[in-house]
Amino acid sequence: MTQIRATHEIHGRRLSRNIGLGIVLVAFVGIVYGLTIAKVGTDPNDDLGAPWAQAQDKAAK
Image (cartoon, rainbow, N blue to C red; front, side, top):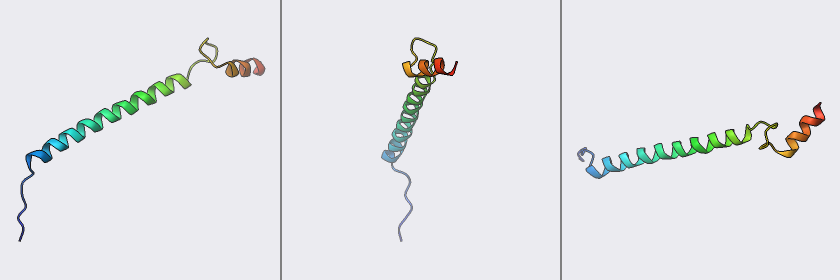
């Protein structure tokens, strides 16, 4: 029969490293998502708006 052994020290380190890396990846994805929403959600009346958005606004009036 095999005995159940306690978790080795290296497994605890790997788990901590994997959790830390997961947190960093989630933060990175959140930053990229936030920047994307901020860029896509710009006001077309601003100078930063795309020219086609300004043309659509003028055509709608």
